[in-house]
Image (cartoon, rainbow, N blue to C red; front, top):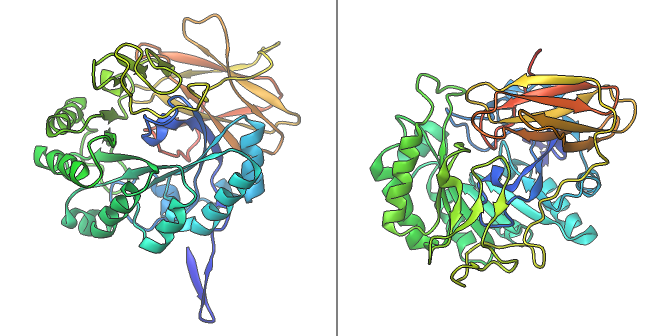
Length: 412
């Protein structure tokens, strides 16, 4: 993503973006900062690694890219899109935000100038000290993908090095920025009990036991497809090991209906955040982040005075006659929805199986490149109906796992 022209380096992906997407903060393996918040996910092209198992290889590997899927944004257009949709969290994510540092910095600076935005950085963190210092000044949340505790894994599988990643995590942990860490558990590569124990032990020693840890399910992709999807039992075992080592908050990822996604008080074990259903619900949690059962601090940061920034808005479904029925594949729990050919502004709604009311999904403008997320209500839901209030074509993408940016449209 850089070229040398007459001895000077130039970026070639400044503002070059995949479609912006509205999602939930939990998508980025962030469970302890404003649960349920709506985020604007921003991804670009290229990556500083080349992992054999990459879930976003069609955008992270430039040679695999379909240029027709791209648009060009400016800091101002990003902020305007977030403002129009009532979103307060800008999430730098997908392939990896390290490779468009200049645009991230410029937009984050603008977001502080023009509004009270929160910036979230989801990254594998293969980055040097100086640019990370620059990010720490501007980011509020870091969600770091620690792929393995093995140097050999990073060299052979990710085509990078472990040392800089660990140093970067320690650099963040030494500040007051919110930090959560995730690890993709990949069958045959890093799914051993020793790996889970080593990861948990390192986090406790260098970041502290309060830092949430997420063990995340892998789905076969890119160059690593001759294996099965990670079993829930493997994630549960890794979580059990981490808790035994002393990690206070540990979750399983890409398993949306597992009870291990819920947050509990570490003092009295009362349920604080329910994430098993399609909606994130705060339970026994005060607006200032304390357990209402035992009165102890919950290690969950909320928006002061409101408890969460999650919201839904819309004018109501009105007269909707055209719809598209989507049958949920077994392994899919989330969809990206956008529109094509809209001649005037409109809104998207979803009617879940067994529900009489239509839920507002998002509002769109003609020519806008924006995706919205629809989440499976529960594991028993077989289909969902999607509606648009404008004369336009609904475009649907299947999201394999959280933080996955799908590029192939679902055909009827």
